[in-house]
Image 1 (cartoon, rainbow, N blue to C red):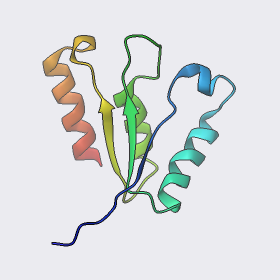
Image 2 (cartoon, rainbow, N blue to C red):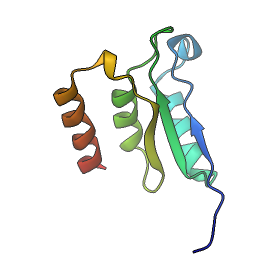
Image 3 (cartoon, rainbow, N blue to C red):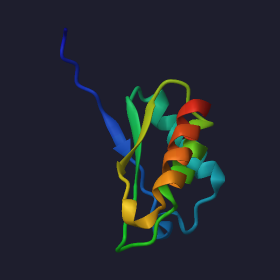
Length: 96
């Protein structure tokens, strides 16, 4: 098996980074990641700083992509109920 370098982007999902951004800028970011040939697009959770909710953010990104891998760079279980989280993640997986 040949080793390949895979590159991705952790999304800048903190609301202050998107304060003046509209949906069109998110669409452009996700499509640019894919168009540039990157392999993945990641979202984060944070207890310290408010962010867009990671799974919702990835759901929106999934509707815009065809081939890149989507994932959470960090998903904090303390912020979610386990069964609901499993259902959300499974739903995103099936829809993508």
